[in-house]
Image (cartoon, rainbow, N blue to C red; front, side, top):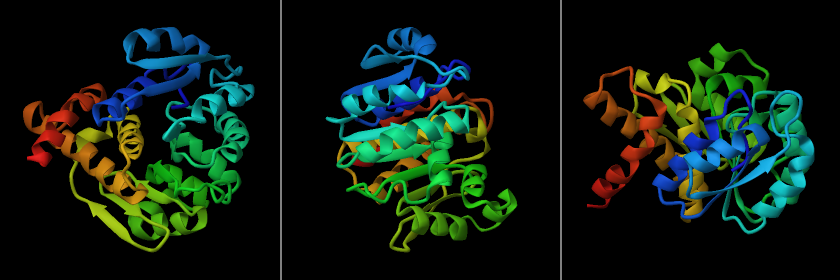
Length: 262
């Protein structure tokens, strides 16, 4: 996993725990110098690699060599949680993405700045990548109004999926998954409580973790989105429809998976 910034130190923690809770196995994290030490203590299961920061507080572009070295043996690579500056995210991913090939790749949140700059930046990947984006981020990539995406998320997600040759998981009040072959899914779990900050980081971690377990991209996106919504429903029932925290979501995943298995 690659991301985080001095201003959003918890994003990688949320994504990392979610991936582990869904069964990813072994976790490696590349994050900024100011975040790495705290993250290593908070998430002791992970190998945490410290990278120097750009002036913005995001990961410096010249961390690309370290990212690619760690990603070389990874089954799944998540790029983007907690990145705050589109320019810095685009610059880093422009150096990382061309050097990835056989891994499953998930691009989250502002990592999509690379797709905004070059819709073909993911075309070379062996496995179909996954974009985990909210309607605002999809609108930015497509250069359309956000209301256009919210009014017809299937149309917008399908268009982006076709352009980027990626599975698109569109978050929001009604989740949609679109695959490059034209198939689409609607996910009906989840409620307004999932609108809390950090919730999207959990969802991207779930998708990356399912890919690491061997799920196909469409399957990982659909089940990651469904699990994210389902555990939100569990907490909404126990705590209240709003007011539960993103950090409470990952712990609900293993019981949900056990229940499904039964």
